[in-house]
Length: 174
Length: 253
Image (tube, each protein chain N blue to C red):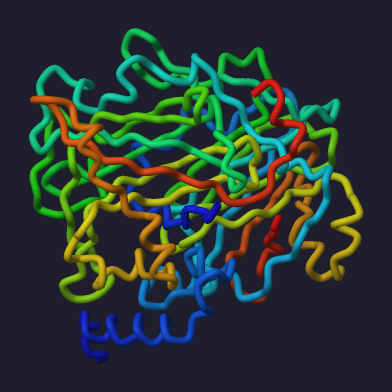
């Protein structure tokens, strides 16, 4: 069947899609954080990032409850913190910054889907905490865009460049 | 100083890009172009390097997030009942199915919508269009698809609104949709438009899809059978997710 085309998330998703503590998948693991940049090197304050990952054992089963809601008020409560849902959603702040607190995935990478005003069709990339054949197949100067820099123990910096000299590797799954 | 960008400038750019676009049936023509300059915000926000293909049957993205009963609340799918009073505007039913590209229903997955109110105003502090907010309308909804992949919302027909892409730029009325498949590769964020909107030819966002038949897939159809007597007018819109999914995910979902 012919697919439904994508359209930009636009500037006004902010009261609909973000989740309270949407980037806090788990306590006691690692922090990954960074900025989103455009082709002029400016930070992007209206990007929405989604994360999907395996748990530390490598299981990709995930769990419901990322958007858990109060059944009385309808208010968004977010995760209860017992199950590892494997899914996160974070809006960049006014300075283009985002933060993810999670566990190291058993598969070695965290999958990222990038949405933004100005981006007509989302983009996929990966945050590599380990290595695999795909990472090794890339030329070194491109592969490094997928590998975060460990700033201090347990805190990893991963910037996303939508365009420009340090443009991030974006992935086509076909 | 550069003269302000007019609708005529944008129309010329759209016509030129449509003329140069690959023919319908091409995979690219069926999707929105990321590099579509008539939508000015896209200029610095699209990659210039080609995307890198992954054809790995073990790729984590062939699975995806799961959702359940805890992720939706009772009034999430009826945007007209989220406040004490009734919202203003034309009450509508929007209903359809979510399918994968093999035509299989996508079951138990999350559909989220957000939209402007009947006057064309979003409940967002950065929306400074001087149209009234409606204290009885937030414009946010969610539901899980049923066993046939079906979804259904009751809401208000959104208004068209101006934006600052160029002088006298107006967005055709639309509802934003966010849809999950069984695989993260099938993720879709898009906009649903209403039939026969006179603003279609002027809109650079809709026209970033260069193939006319693909653009038609973004427009819902009035469906009299979905209209609820003395209550709503009905619109049908089916959604087909692109992207591969792991075949083993079919069972149990």
